[in-house]
View (spheres, rainbow, N blue to C red):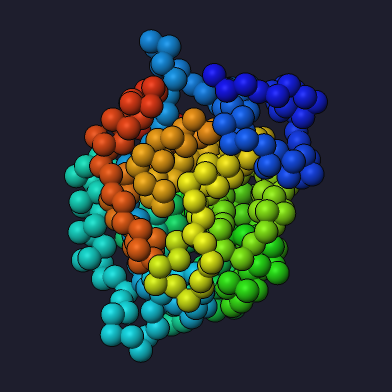
Length: 363
């Protein structure tokens, strides 16, 4: 058992009270093991841990698939190795036949959701997107469409000359079920201008979430760190997410991961390590007292570290993720099926249970 310094700050965390940004910065420098203890205590005190009929603590996961409907993008983010221009020979837009094959494969293994994102394609029409959503919704009604990141939705509003609310409302009517937190990176404009100057700014990202939550769509929240940002920038990012959740209340989960530098324009002197990932996840669990679920990120950290992350405040193992193209383009190619995920969860001392996007248990 890790010895925990019982001072005013730790007592505040253990009591489930809200901490300030200054206190978060102080906690950041605590020993990693002690931070993990506080993160797990925070999860438990907030009653985010649930138990099965035998008294075993549950860790959830979802069976879904990433579908990148196009790799054409005109914002050229420096950290991205996935995007292509229309001049590149390997650019694509998925056909309906290709899409159906992917959805048939997902359905065959009991999948319940797709995470559908693409690049900022400059030429696809508004009707193309509506037809895509309707097609999926009508042919695969059991599949939730968790789709289109905030930067994509801002891109659509600009490209089609439509109010953002109208875009999101029509997408919802056509079958969009929830919105992923992609494109958040770091919600500090000084950072965003360095790594993705053509992508929407922090306020615009948050505007999408506010609007989506107002019309009844839940979303996730994310952070991609370990590039040009400071520790203070990371905490400002968490502050903005917490403030947004206070206002609109629609975030179901938070996921953070480290920048993967291979094959990207953006270079770093030192790749962010495992301990730094665990530290930030634990700090996020403590600081984000109003976001109920924290996912471990085995997709970037690897299965074993994803397992360890369950001891640092995470209550969810994320997705089976039958397909992943963006992170793997940057050199990270971990893969797990449902059986492997359940084994990892059990070996960590928890009971695995499948869920849907809204964290309702399916078994």
